Length: 218
Image (cartoon, rainbow, N blue to C red; front, side, top):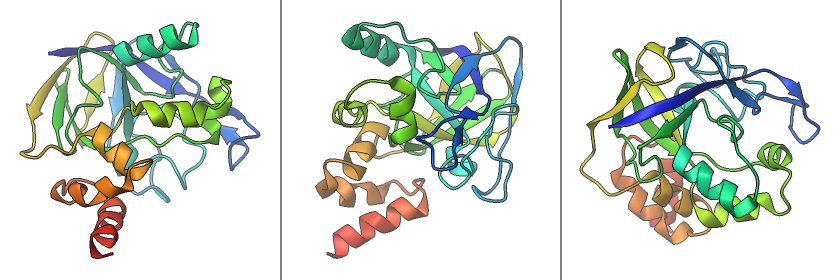
């Protein structure tokens, strides 16, 4: 069983690296309970699956398949040691900073219960962008992050409800395949030869499955 160390929300701030000139990537822990909900489609929906969290670029962020972003404290600590700096919860733009959860080893379609109410489903990995690089201020950050293949997981909200710091995280269901968050990330970035192996993970967004089908057909 894992734990939510913090629930993190972002407010819009100016960012010249962002396509829309503003970003909500800089998230900070909040006290008390926060509502998670299914936000609907990426464009035209509610944006984030976390009430109070601002999504500025609706073209690339938010929507049901990217409703909530989770990152493991253990991986943040690894980055902190490598970079020689503290990395607080939320700095990577994650909504949930977890402990004791194998976020990158989670299988696509895996379901987690968080607290007493919420059920989340692992949907896809995070792909780094210029806004993330601007947030981190590390030379060659996108290349470094991509090579490590520790992307963190986006999650769908299957059952809405309230979450808070200290809530337990329990795996309710683990699909009968080996397509993990990390494997999916590698297939989508530096190892496209892995794309055909993603087809068994039918919980992936259709756009990714179509990319895998094209690779298989080719």
